[in-house]
Length: 267
Image (cartoon, one colour):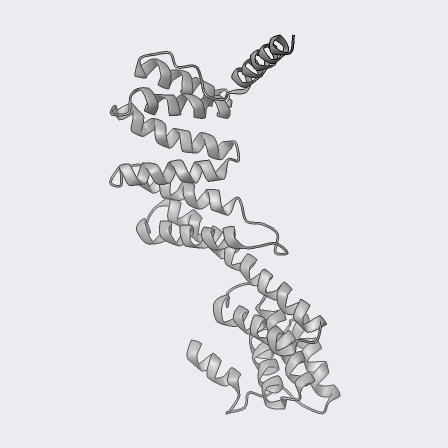
């Protein structure tokens, strides 16, 4: 009796496995038939089925010209499913096998897009953001005169702004807990690495506040002066100015300040 139940259990398990298996049953078909079915699935926005069928082209006809096309279409289908790791893996495999292919620019762009779509909130780890920066730079460096590069440039600016936002969040946390040296390093990182982002004004203000707290008058005055020179109408500058006036100081870039040396190194 127990043996019969065991056999029935195995049979049910096998049926369950076969019904949930994503891979299509192997049926030998012409490359045109498989590719056309995959493309039809893509047009119907059945991206899961499209990816499986495009992969099947490569499995059954690995040396045909259709296999090259199918590999890239498979990467796109994975991307549309939000399966970004699979999209990156497939696109990288395409580039490894066909580095000089005319569609290589799109493969690099798809990799960058896949990382870009995985950028997380500034409160979380920014590993994918760093990978997005590298991939976007790669597109711009390799294909500077293309639409891919132009779009990558826009996204790179947004990605830098995101990374600057992460630095600001960590800096504020350190500042709130009175770890002023650690906080100042984060705010200075924003100025050194992300000078074109929207976070520069606040970073300058926070540094002014920290230097005043630490009693470093020259740096506080210089930082506020730079903030006022570049963003005279900024609310952050008004706050910094008030803090200085309350202590009988005025914004002024002093010869020996870190900020004077920093600004001269840029301009």
